[in-house]
Amino acid sequence: ALTGKVSYEGPLSAPVEKGASVAHLKLFRGSLEVLDVPLKTAEAVGVGTLPNRALDAGLELVAGFFRNNAPKR
Image (cartoon, rainbow, N blue to C red; front, side, top):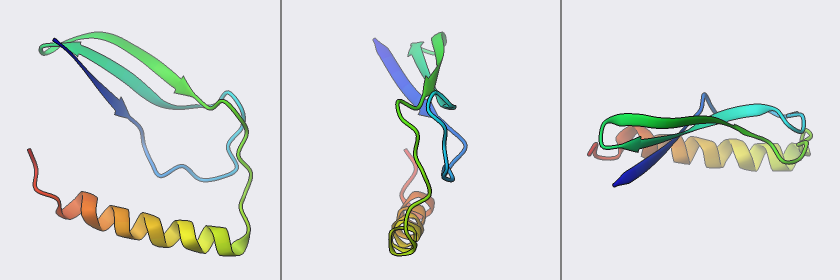
């Protein structure tokens, strides 16, 4: 069976240019890594407005809490 994993150093900070390598897709067959390809942005992403950035920061804070406190498999 194949399994996949997306790995990145995040969160990403805007602005991000089109075509920037931001992550890697890794495919495994059992414990053997069979593919590692970079994932690139399809479009450029500019800096958002102050209210959008505040909302994103709040959402990232909540998501980070769940990531850090979720039971590990």
